[in-house]
Image 1 (spheres, rainbow, N blue to C red):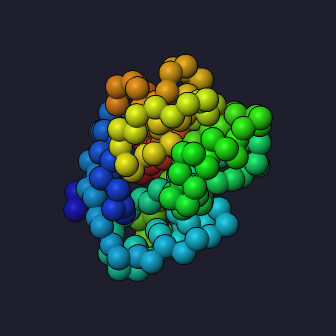
Image 2 (image 1 turned 120 degrees about the horizontal axis):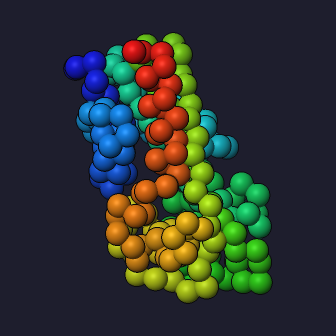
Length: 191
């Protein structure tokens, strides 16, 4: 593997496309997707889950890599659903989400935690948040990997995320913010 290449451990094709685009645009880093059979336990935080995946992946691959764990947070409910975002959506769907938020503060944000290691000993984490609110109605779900995009209105766009172009969706996204911190770290310590 070349010095400016990196493995991204994910099964999520949409997440990979986004990470690949951002890393190349922001730091000319080439990322390759690696799918591993890592049983992902439901841990208490995005940090714990991302770190667990990175540790398990490095044991197998012994190569520089990143992992990502992302969730949406409803401000009304502190850190929920957070690391349980996918599970929560699968359990209650949009109807359940709308019922739970009825009459509540609808402010929300996406939160990503990227974990990086190149030696399996040190693990660095980078966080990014993307603030907005939950819409009153569900829009069309464009990407099954990102169901919350059909109800999330970012503050900087003021339109449901699934209704705008992919480039606009990721212009100031949570993942871009976390990856920019990672790129700054990599440039500072590896140049």
